[in-house]
Amino acid sequence: MKILQKEIRQEWLEHILPFWMNLKDEQYGGYYGEVGYDLNVSTDQPKGGIAAARLLWSFAAAYRITGEAQYAEHARHAYQFLCGPLYDHEHEGIYWAVDYQGNPLDTRKHVYNQAFAIYACSEYYRATGDEDALQLCIRLFQWLEHTGYNRLIGAYREEFDRFWQEQPNEMLSENGVIADITMNTHIHVLEAYTNLYRIWPDEQVRQSLDNLLLILHDRMYDPQQRRLNVFFDNQWNSLLNLTSFGHDIEASWLIDDALQVIGNTNPVYQKMVTDMAYRVAEVAIQPDGSLMNEQEDDHIDTSRIWWVQAEAIVGFYNAYQRTSDETFLQLIDRLWAYIKDHIIDPRPGGEWFWSAGDQGEPGQREVAGMWKCPYHNSRFCIEITERMN
Image 1: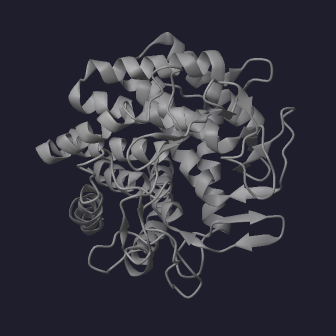
Image 2: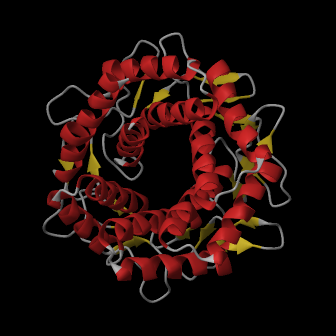
Image 3: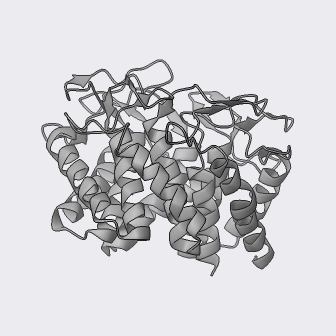
């Protein structure tokens, strides 16, 4: 495992982070909005709020762990763009996107987006002690709890316009439905509040984390299927028979992380964590060692998405730490071999492909964009190297 740990840390510091550092926009701020499959950098593409927050988190975490000044500078640059052009100083909250010059382009506010800003700015505070970043986190947290949480139905709302008027959830609905409630938003609010609690252990945050764990277990978790249901209407009816294997294995370790940070030892939650990991291991691993994407009814999407592979390694290692079942270590070895062979882009100037197909051929989507950024693979590298220590 020491060899694997060394390879993963090397991938992080020598391949992933340099790629994103090279996209720094010195003229307009932030980082260039898109790199195509052909590795051409589009300097005039929109810059998304989610990508900006994930870039900030990645550089802040790199600085916190390594202490290297170059990452501090990139974290500062990313922070200034997130709380500058992407922040609505009149009505609060992070925009969905600005244009390449930093002008508001898509001014809707999404709870998912605000959660990532909390997650990123919490990490920036952990790394630098910048009090402004902490105060921004607290404001966004209070805004989400006041406006984003629907106490009548016990769920976080999804999408708003610039003025915080609720809108249909176009941005986080898929598979032909418009969902009033999504699992994806809830696991990332949990993730954000967990990081916030690390730096600001306020009782309000603790109560919100307890509530999120209750929602995930009592409302979203299907103990028979050992999965989280994905999309719901506002009466908590599940809209699709859909299993997202990547989200399940990611959620398993994010939930466990929250439990450990707040000191919750509820065995019901711990069982959910390990049961989801075992279920993904049993049904979603491909013969080549990779992890398939999702299943809706009888239709299986076997795409090997970059972030799914990364999160699976963290989730399986977390399950190994919970259970001491070395089956999970064997799965990790095969997943890492698959990532090296088919997901990591060997071309000069490349990073990770978006996906790979059944024959290992790379999917030809963008290499950097509104959703494709260093958060999943940077975090995988960080989690594994630190956990193995």
